[in-house]
Length: 186
Image (tube, rainbow, N blue to C red; front, side, top):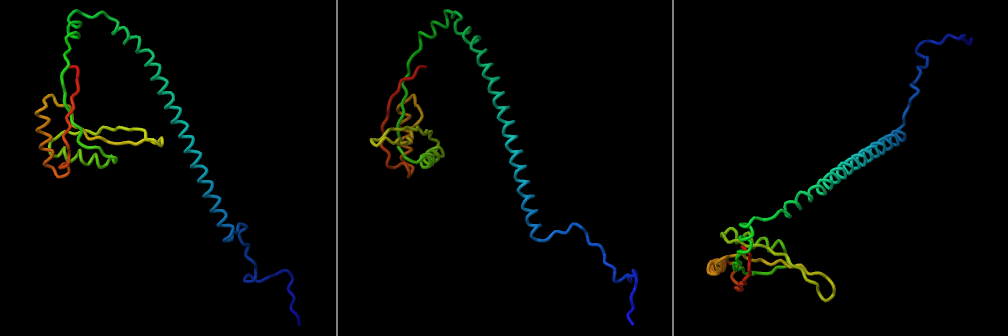
């Protein structure tokens, strides 16, 4: 009636051994997160080791330059101590002071606007410069302003001519001419 088999199982009923390494989704996400953290830590370690190497190279270079600078003053001092010839002494005593003229065009709180005005003047072949000045206010804060000035002119009439041509530009119509004189050695 009952058919009992003793130890012999047909092939289709045999169990196939499953791989011993099974990863579920939750475990996979933890493994990916751990892998990313490991990659980040290795990147940071490499980055800081590279920075340390760069700092060492910089310190070595600056120390070598400092040694060179300590050695060079001996040679430059010897050059300055050397006796001067008579011609050099006469040339130094005959230095003449020349008069130079310049004018302050405008003062601006914004560097970008001052630079824009200098560019406009440069396009019209007039040399202007930006001079940074700062002052201390009553409340203790520093106020930085940018003066737009002309370059030094040897001839006052040439400066006046350039200022008149500068007044033809729309951005410079309201300037007031204030020519100042400085003495330069030449």
